[in-house]
Image 1 (cartoon, rainbow, N blue to C red):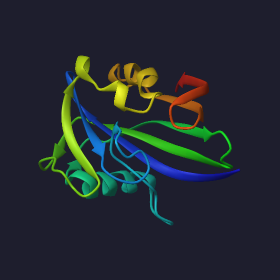
Image 2: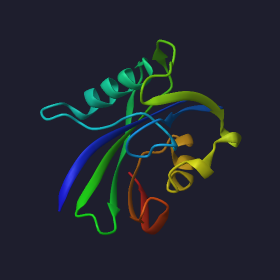
Image 3: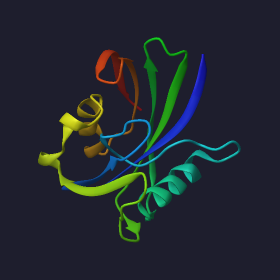
Image 4: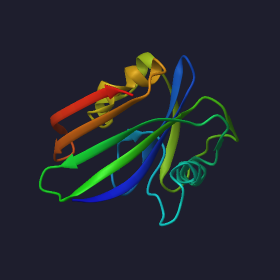
Length: 152
């Protein structure tokens, strides 16, 4: 199977998380972290920093790799390999761009109903400071057929 390599950066502190409403393209209309594709020859961490800069105009200062997710979509021969990072400090003021509209959410107000269904399953590990790897198999974009999450 072919693999597409992507990044996801979650910016949070101990009470709230910064999410972005995707305004176009893949996952349009969903709240998510920030990230995207890794360009040929680009380091994965550099890609995560570039993407968050392009999407909301901030630079993470304490970015940490938290894990790797593999997503499989029923009927699609390409796997999605997503490298998850987190940051609690950044430079700049999050601002809306062409692709994303950022907004802070308290942990108990996270809009899971308008996010990827897998987020409910791994956000507790993220907030607990754990590193972990995950596999999710989807039917469409809303139904999880299989999943596995392991602390790393």
